[in-house]
Length: 471
Ligand SMILES: NC(=O)C1=CN([C@@H]2O[C@H](COP(=O)(O)OP(=O)(O)OC[C@H]3O[C@@H](n4cnc5c(N)ncnc54)[C@H](OP(=O)(O)O)[C@@H]3O)[C@@H](O)[C@H]2O)[C@H](O)CC1
Ligand SMILES: [K+]
Image 1 (cartoon, rainbow, N blue to C red):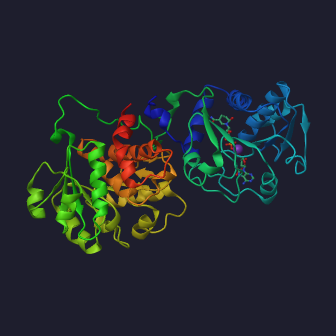
Image 2 (image 1 turned 90 degrees about the vertical axis):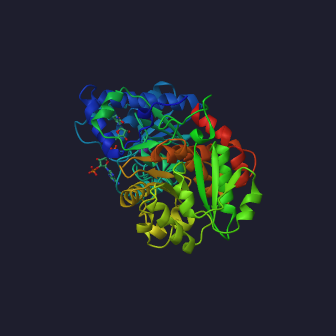
Image 3 (image 1 turned 120 degrees about the vertical axis):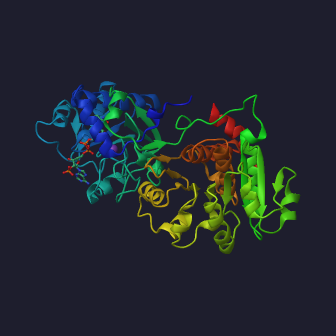
């Protein structure tokens, strides 16, 4: 079922702190902690048979949630041990819930941790910003089956980076809204199954923080469906610059555009026109000059870069920019330290290597790097990877998890440009086209589930993928 955009919000740890503070005005923190502990316990009871449990409790509220879980599991008859990794502050809410734990406390759990059936990681939450110390790291290394409260301790809630060490959880239960670090790599690989639980914080508190980051799912955007009144120009025209030597890229992009529902696809061939004409009767291969092609005011959407040599990009891209058409720029446009070249494009789609070539290092923070590049160029940036980040010049960011390794095939990027161009030609904004395009690309991969698809196979599934995105 399509979610509301507010449900897709991803909150940075500092935004979550603001929400916690706001929520505490109406619901006491100790009650929120109790609710959080209940939520985690329910998820454990749903998935695991009774077994011995070691709850590792940190000094903060994450540890507080852990004490509640310990109490509730023990009440359910499970053998439960608690280790206080650090003592809570005196007279704090955490100290109060810790005081309600009347079961076994183990001070040195190193010898137990390997023997218990389940370890609950309630050491630190998503706000952790310094590496775990060696003692905690050595202890966690021995844990076999881990359930993490909020986030596995050691995963940075904002960037998904691992600060020294983090356990690989089987299940992570977080509260109210997920955090970027749950979806960004490498953090995502440590989270296991992610469950987001309501602990009694009203959605209205979201208005107290300005959400700038979302999970990329339907609901963040809405794509047009078939209309009885559709005709080819209303569906949209996509024009693709075809390279003189590497012709496959533009063809794949053009196939993807047609299969995603473009009404008309032109290839402006820089040579090899016959080769493009011969590849599909559905492509219109331009015979005239670029100047004449650009005089057609219906041709507002252009793909530039796939299969192009640097000299071809340098000749064509400035002309497209000068004509004020909307440009989806990829592949050949990404030249070393040439971010100026990209100004005037609408959407750029670099993978990490291309991104670094143009903009420099990302310093382990994909979201900030993509946001900065979007501000610098004025383009929507699609930073491609297994955790694609889409950033808009206005600061909005989406993180995509709807993708599989099946997309890691030659020509897959060309396919993505064709999809995004089609959505842009259908009238969606740059932001929506980029986000929806990335999701549809991922969906096409999922629809090929039991094979090793080529980019051509992906294209075959694009119609269905688009329909699924519109449901
Ligand atoms: N609305 C909600 O989502 C609720 C969430 N809850 C849970 O609360 C935690 C967040 O609690 P918080 O107390 O803010 O944070 P932590 O539990 O992670 O603990 C922070 C304390 O740990 C110290 N710290 C931090 N890093 C280290 C480190 N590397 N080594 C040692 N100590 C560390 C830190 O000390 P500082 O001096 O650095 O401040 C803090 O004392 C959230 O994750 C949820 O699980 C609540 O239940 C309420 C509702
Ligand atoms: K944790």
